[in-house]
Image 1 (tube, rainbow, N blue to C red):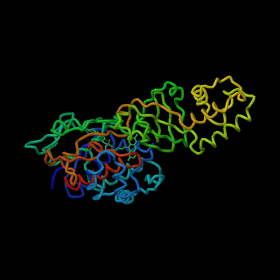
Image 2: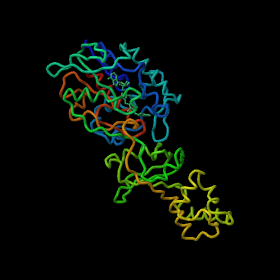
Image 3: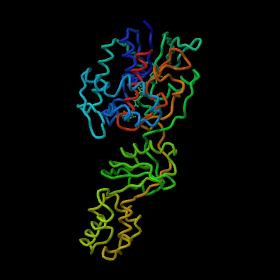
Length: 408
Ligand SMILES: Cc1cc2nc3c(=O)[nH]c(=O)nc-3n(C[C@H](O)[C@H](O)[C@H](O)COP(=O)(O)OP(=O)(O)OC[C@H]3O[C@@H](n4cnc5c(N)ncnc54)[C@H](O)[C@@H]3O)c2cc1C
């Protein structure tokens, strides 16, 4: 029997601790918080998108950050194994749009309940309010950990599952990077991913708080090439844009450092330019004696009307029957191609995940063991892996945690 310390009671650490304990090891699971899985509670807007109902290739395709490193982890413990795991621990799941898997209850608390049940069943010694400061080694092998209060715990193996540096209020403050670097590991540059974006245009601020549903977006690079498109919901904020389609889009422009790209919003994706033109023509005939500024109520949300009027270049006081065909057509083009220049992103603390982390070159993909330090294992977001939205990031954490747990 080995003595194993797991640092971090998020999905990666919980899975690793339970699996190691099932193998008969003496396992202590440490977390600095006063409860487990704080990030799980806020995941999926409180509903927790546990995983995705796709095949292994589908998982890898949705993990742009070193997906190939995860083949062993997913073949050992797949997304479907994860769904079964939760069913066995009393959590029923359902599949939604895009293969997203949620608890039937739509409540992330129930995910944590199932995980607590697993920890109890496997006799893991859970020790909360315990922040780890350092991993101790001798001759390049793990010998123990030191807590922030100075307490030392000796052990044969450590699983480092401290998460990334996003949403630090959940406990993921990047401690794992510091500890790993100290042991000689390379930390690939940390970058925010699945993150709200900054807009150059001042008018965006006027739309702060406005949420748009059923819009489509495209992202163009500086050569004007379309690099991404999506359909769904977005939100304007005081700094730029956010919401589901924006967060998803953001990962596709991480390599551009979130700069020199254009976000093009189609406000009326269900209508071709021709149909939209006909629609506006009908509205303009109906409101021919009204001023332009009072003619768009049926077409656009109130908050957006002054912005669109301004961008269209047509004087707001003009009577609708004085608007020329070319001006109307330009309005149609504006509504189909509302363009925002993206010039940055919010910082890592506001990102859903942290891209970058402990280099995958220094971790054995079949065991999650460090290639530098014997007895040191990694699980979850602390590793340089990251996925798109859709349940892929939790799947990474659970599967790498499983692999670390059966090998440590
Ligand atoms: C708002 C939001 C919504 C999200 N929604 C989804 C979703 O629906 N689906 C999805 O797949 N992914 C989602 N994610 C991403 C996903 O939650 C993370 O990728 C995942 O939780 C990472 O798991 P982890 O175990 O690696 O780390 P974490 O869940 O971050 O857990 C790390 C744990 O380590 C502890 N810790 C850190 N340092 C120390 C230390 N020094 N000593 C002791 N303990 C320490 C922390 O307190 C924490 O409990 C979301 C993320 C956010 C922020």
